[in-house]
Image (cartoon, rainbow, N blue to C red; front, side, top):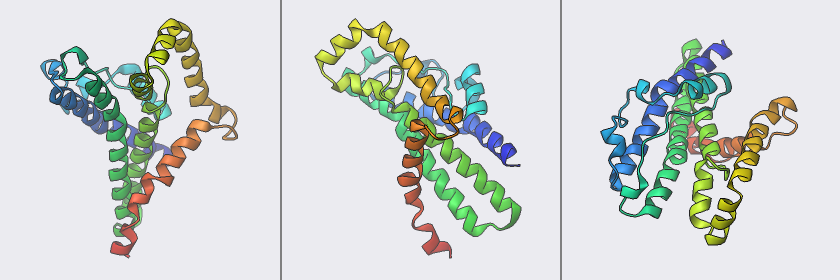
Length: 220
């Protein structure tokens, strides 16, 4: 049953959460002056417009993945640097806020709905929260291809920019290996070495979960 609810929650992630996060990114781009996403029909809650086949399979099988890239033209924005920074922050912030909402709903359900229905609904929202936290943390990794690296690139200065462009091919190849190691070393070592898992756990339970502190005072 736990496996069934986990798969069901991941399907909800694809059908509900990813369209919201992508649409918000498109709205932020439009706010900054670029309406490419809107003209491309990507600001919509229709999941079929956003889903990438491989990325969707990754979410269903591993709990993390990706959607189709949003068509964004930073050259059309009012301020290039501000636009890049805001767009890079959109995904992780949206995922963290979604995680907080799901955690609070799951906690409220656990206090107010009894029986198997309460357990099932709580598991669904708890799993959605975990997936959102996982995606938010992954987006912030300072590795090429991730929003965290884009933020690092924008604020690191010209010396770092020149170094990266000079070594870009090597850095990208090493970064891909690092990503694979981070994603799978926890399973391979049975949790003995799992820096990404520890970071996700710290953010999820050490920060985001604390937003549910008020619920026991209201519902007990």
